[in-house]
Image (cartoon, rainbow, N blue to C red; front, side, top):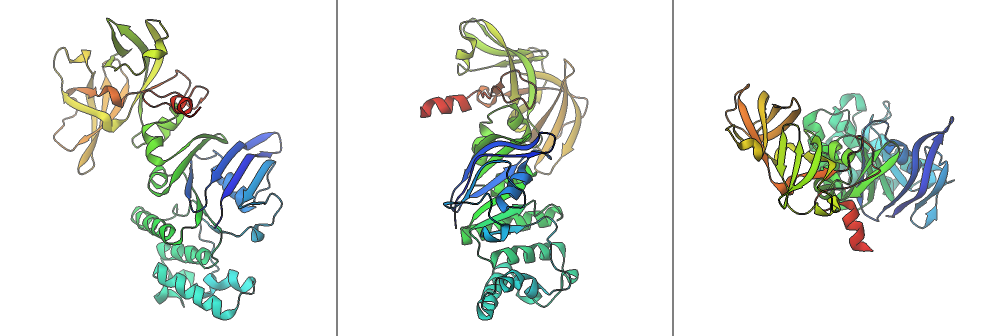
Length: 383
């Protein structure tokens, strides 16, 4: 096993087009790190630079103590699992799993022992003599995992390995990957655009956008304390609701006010006012943090008055899509129950569940601020 370190790493294509820009990242020995972000954010390019499949335009890449900028992929002691399995169709499962070891001239007895060990771990023993065409998608992906495991590399690299599986198989294989990591304790870098995979698999999660790292933290810290509006909106399904309005003080009480929205705040963001009575701000509220009640006169002082547009039942919960009196849309996730469309409701939220951000355009991280435990506040505690 080994750590992986990226120091000011960039990837630039002709025409001065940056796919990845100035990334500093350390993946600890034995850690499961997930790179997540929208298509084109640079996560797969970063993984391919670690693998040696993409050259580095600038910066330094280390695996363990050694610099690997110019080291051939086969000499980096890594194993990669691809989205499309990349199995040899004319070979059996046993032959696919042993191929890399044969190419390295590993002794025949050791090859047999490693293949048997990996097959037992993945439940592939009954399938060893089959060819890929006789396997299901989930079985093929397990063979791809087995082929990586038998190499016993210092680092595992996963490039969206579950994208071709149906929903049920994705959940099952995801659990299998997590179990394997706990048993093998091999340093793992996993790329996905699926936030659920990122949240459930990663010891830490790296959120990327436009070739930049926006936030690195544990899954729950990123979810509960997003560093900026992009991160807040990307993680979470349904996504966070945003309202552009004002932070203001009236008779000693802090409020967030926007068209059709008036929410009571605690004293945490008072320093933002810097002696002023009000300032422009963006409030973010996750759908599950709303509580819905039947609308009655006067409640608009303490919540958001709205009309129910669509109700989507999800079993134990339901997503309720609302239209505020000001014409804005928002979504709430509530316990399942009778909720008629076109009915009037008031959405309430606790002050502790309101995130505040600087009024930047979505995706602009120039002022990463969060109401509650902001990234800026965390940094100030460490210096």
